[in-house]
Length: 149
Image (cartoon, rainbow, N blue to C red; front, side):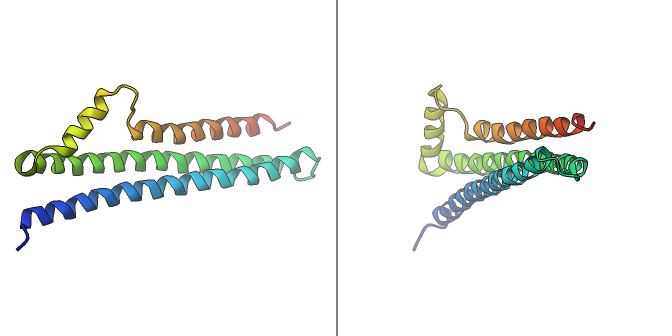
């Protein structure tokens, strides 16, 4: 008969891995949305530079789109923090279980990674993407704002 604690440990470990997969899916979604914005921006700027009679309307469209993208990227950043906290909580429980029952494989692995200063946490790398997109969209917003004549 299988050990119930071991089965729960396996299920909990599997749920922690699923959170990591969800986190990656969320990141892929937001990267795709941000990447899809560039063709829209290129078409809109092309219309502006070709002397379209709707020029000021295109600038307003750029400003509105940039504002929406800023909001979207702030929301992405909040989700990164949420998934970070959720993963930390899950691995804290896993670590406590390990230390009590099975040995400290995950804890030892994490200590080893932290001791290697060349390795940075994934969350720190993840956070840089929304910040860079936010900066780009803020600059775009102000470019459009100051382009009114």
